[in-house]
Length: 284
Image (cartoon, rainbow, N blue to C red):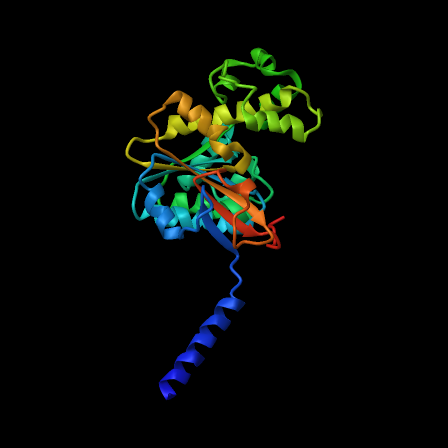
């Protein structure tokens, strides 16, 4: 009888602890099945390229990015890259990675995002400490803005040097891709048909420089806004078009009120889906 009561007390305590548990996120696969972080690492380290789609101001996504590169580094040689650095800032970034300039100089000389110090500096510093190549692979924003106003033709007037910071022109473009069509719908006509073209030139440029800096046998981990890789479009579409043999894994970030079940609308967005509590504090 005494053992029976001890068992009941233990069970009640366990249930109480579980009931009080408040996870900050739950990781799902594309079909909405819960998976462990460790299992995801084991799977993605078998790939060539990882596209990690984030919410730019989501603290959980940024923390998991750093944890992911740490764990992947234990299994594979890495190359890293990010949307948050533009290709014409590559040499400045390289100087920082080589220890030739300090963080203050990098901040002065490069166009860093406002949340760089909290959200991206840990990734860059990890690359620096471990001598990992880090690609600044996005199109300089000036030229994306030109496309949003004047279409791809606006880039015909720029110099050869400027074109070296962009995917080779003309880029492949499919206006019927769901992500680009949805962008027009979301903007309700504001920005016109050139808006998804500006998105496409970013996707194509990031894909181009991922391939340029990719080292066979290594694992390239790329960080970008989720819209650039959700539903296997965007960057992934351009990568597959250039090299269908590439093995690519995608990760995305979503936000829900209830974490216990992935919403239907969030299934299929990526191979792995980080579902974050919608009440989570943002970094800005």
